[in-house]
Length: 257
Image (cartoon, rainbow, N blue to C red; front, top):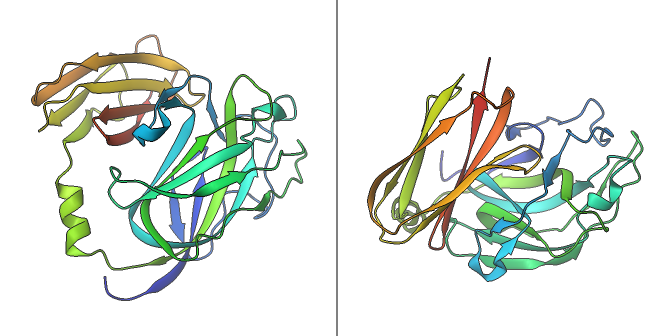
């Protein structure tokens, strides 16, 4: 089945988990987006970019789980009527098969949202079949706000066979990361198994991009454990971002009562 082309629609809801489906939507009305600030992604603190060329920046990266041929896209910018200036404006989009080697897909300008619950977004880039497992959007600037936001993005894509070379590239990553337990109530551990002698940058944020904890682990290969004490955290989703050298990984962790 890996060598069969399967046409599908790939929909990313930034306020929820990624969804693969033939006919699905992140909203009750397929082409509308709510005005709630939490129905989207927000970054209020810059962080080292998965693509080292972009340095410390505001960015969002999608991991589709396997390589797809990307085609048309549709974008809904940050639609909170009180913070429309958070919406991304000029952005750089990069794609990658392995999360380490990035190829530029172009620079684009995202139109500002109107803050209405009938907001229907705008047509995004046509990637014309570009193959990628990872897609990275880096904000050059926004519409004037202190934070950077985006509501939703939808891709049309085709399932493609993953080559042996691509599979080997994924296996040759410098590190792997596991969170346990997840979900957790009070304490959890972030376990990093590194095979490279390069320093590790890590950051834990809430869904608004506010930093909960961050740090640097010295460049020594082996097992490294970050102990997360969630006793002071409100229940909800948190994001663990790990970078070592030019490789990057991101996981979601859920704190429950």
